Figure 1 (cartoon, rainbow, N blue to C red):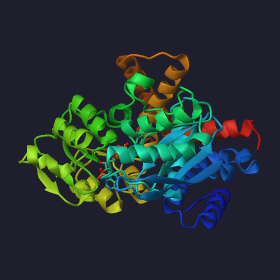
Figure 2: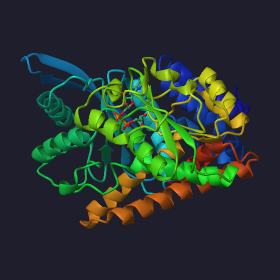
Figure 3: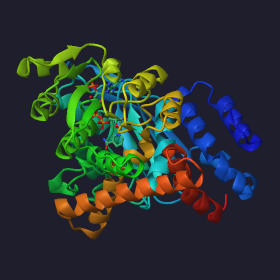
Figure 4: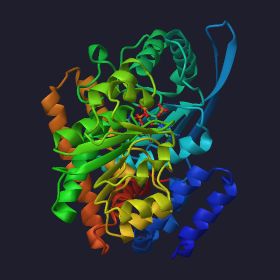
Amino acid sequence: MFHSEYVEKVYRNLCEKNAHEVEFLQAAEEILSSLEPYVEKHPEIEKEKILERFVEPERLIQFRVSWVDDRGEVQVNRGYRVQFNSAIGPYKGGLRFHPTVNASIIKFLGLEQVLKNSLTSLSMGGGKGGSDFDPKGKSDREIMAFCQAFMTELYRHIGPDTDVPAGDIGVGGREIGYLYGQYKKIRNEFVGVLTGKGLTYGGSLVRTEATGYGLCYFAEAALKQLKNESFQGKTVVISGSGNVAIYACAKATELGAKVVAMSDSNGYIYDAEGIRLDVVRQIKEVRRGRIKEYLNEVPQAVYCDRSQEIWTLPCDIALPCATQNEIDLDHAKILVEHGVLAVCEGANMPSTLEASRYFIEHRIVYGPAKAANAGGVATSGLEMSQNSQRCSWSFSEVDQKLKEIMVRIFNNAYETAKELGNPYDLLTGANIAGFEKVCTAMLSQGV
Ligand code: NDP
């Protein structure tokens, strides 16, 4: 599996220590295997045990979150925050509220975040957090009660120069508002301790749109460089219908593509005429309903109740924006057989390792998550800058900065991949480009 004995040893030790953490080991394997060419050229990495340190989080915090539901019953959930690496800046990364959340998921997301944040070229270390709380079907009051209870534990570990959480699956503007309100009550401080805030209390324009828009800016740059192509006239399939998916759909459409399918965890909709995003937004953002309800407004659309089968639909560009491991090798083979040009990842680790290797082998424009979806955290970084300067930039100013960052991330990953002999291997390119800065900082800072 590995060429280098040292890297293999690091991975084996990690497996022994974290035997049941499947997602974390998957992310670590992907990263470690692509770092091998860099590690071989830099013997100081082995000497100073940089890889051993890099895969071990600086801190993993787990806490009880107890709260009272609408029936007056006490509910108990588990909260997490992993403070993975602070070599290049304060910890930064989202919070996920979803019943599947556990230490393995949070650690895989945290490890990915370290490299992603480094790629943005802003000064942010990597962290991630969340809870196994399921926001689906909860009243607004229950969401508030949970967020307040969660922050009552989390507040002691975070701060504007220590650790700055944001949103992720199940955590959007509403949840960030409740979390921020509670932090402020406890600390009596109005500071930029969270990003993704509302515009009336320190949020940045474009933060809501940033991950989806950034994904399309990345894909557009990659399509141009590798295939001399663009979104214009292309058919696009997007999984998910949450924050990332919605704004990816908006930008892909603006760039001239037709998005024909979107999904949620219950199923997908296919609309040959092009998805009507106003209908999806009404269902998802206003009513918090199910994607199936699209058929009430657009009866000619088709609904399928197996969400992962969305990848069997023919398309030119695939944008997975739902969750991890949603594209396996079989899906990858079908996509390639159907002539897909590009697969760019809005979600974190949506392709299995086998699927991503298959895309690279077949010279598909494959945009790995840590590069392609870095627009969200990059704009969070811009929100932090605005908060410290107590100013706010215009929509077009932030959008322009986001575009420049995404193009720079692509160029960085592409140049590194090209130097190593395969310009399509943006996965290795992104991993090495992100690692280089973190590694140099770790070496300079001692043990
Ligand atoms: P949201 O909660 O807004 O939306 C998540 C979407 O994915 C929903 O449509 C949801 O469907 C679907 N989904 C979630 N879990 C599953 C599952 N197990 N199977 C199928 N569909 C599922 O989250 P975001 O849009 O913010 O996040 C989506 C992805 O993007 C995640 O991987 C996240 O880590 C990543 N990401 C998000 C960033 C951000 O800025 N928000 C930044 C970078 C990456 P349902 O409603 O049925 O649950």
